[in-house]
Image 1 (cartoon, rainbow, N blue to C red):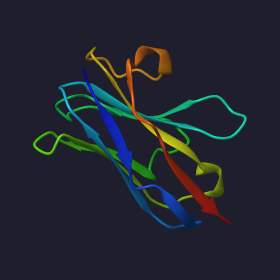
Image 2: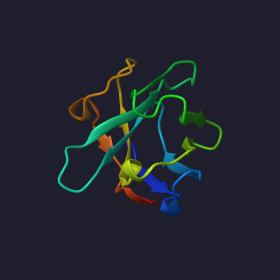
Image 3: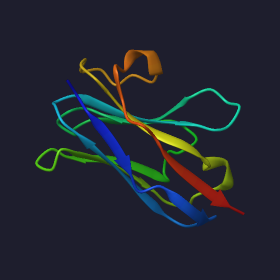
Image 4: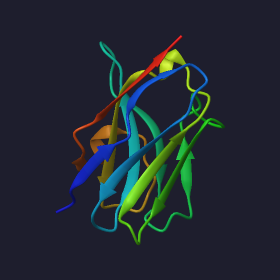
Length: 120
């Protein structure tokens, strides 16, 4: 059983940075997703269990960085140059497979989400 707990969300101004953390037990491929009001949950970034491979949505490439510290059982999402359109509830998710996937249904474990609000 993989348990996920996110933290680090908040209210910031456009251009600011935030770092989200996800306490994740177990050796799994991890991803970050986000969901804005009235929109479907969308992929943000993913990382393999060993941290060697990452993948990003085009909308965040160059601004967000996913990383993990397996010694601390924690996955991070460093978000720089935040934009109002990044406003959403951010979820970390885990899957047992080794592939980096972007479809929410391929992830079997989910955290409760953390709100990120970016004001203009």
